[in-house]
Length: 298
Image (cartoon, rainbow, N blue to C red):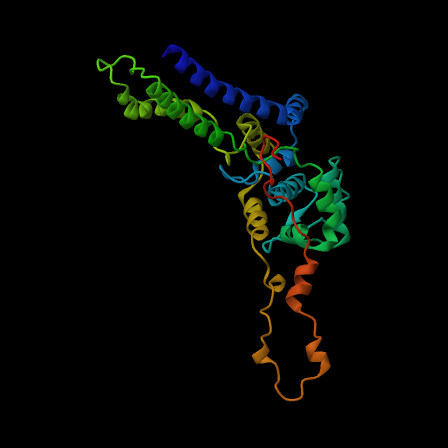
């Protein structure tokens, strides 16, 4: 019985060791990045990329929050101002002394186009250069831990059931029970599986945010950078950036029944679709979560 238990438990441990080795190999580049960036210091815009939002448990790698923080830092430095409508402009006569590439491009862009809202910075094609520079500050980290708990839990089930079945075939009694009946394994495998499943549950949930230490560090960095900000600026920037202006909303499509029935011209049949034109004008934001997991999924 000792050899049976040892073999199955070693198989369970071996699978988890292989999972850990896979995770270690796939996250090598990310761990190197974290080591370097923590030593050199995380800038607020890069930290905002990873946080995704000011609230806890937000999805990481959100471009919108990174743009908000860049704008708020610019306003805090006095190189920009925001009105009640959420429009950011560069004060007259203000040259701007931003050394940060993202904020320097932002000042130049706002001055050239006579201001913009955060929504326009994220969607309007005129600000594509700003978005390109902003994306260069995105941390090379994946937004989800990866599917490691499920294989480990499956291995725990297979190991517990396989050990019990193996013991029954060899007519081995359950250790610690007065009864020598091997049939006791039909129920004894359940608590064994519960113990192994508890060990397997040490793996984080596949959709959970990885690198909690880096997350805490980023939150502290953004808080320190915006410590002197007033609540009006934060509210004006964040509210406008999360809503679509009425003039940018896609109009309803024209149905066949709503077209004139008498003498339809060729121009009616070839009229441009406004909803497609409007959608084509918008620039796709890629600040969402990564498609892969932190473990370097295939």
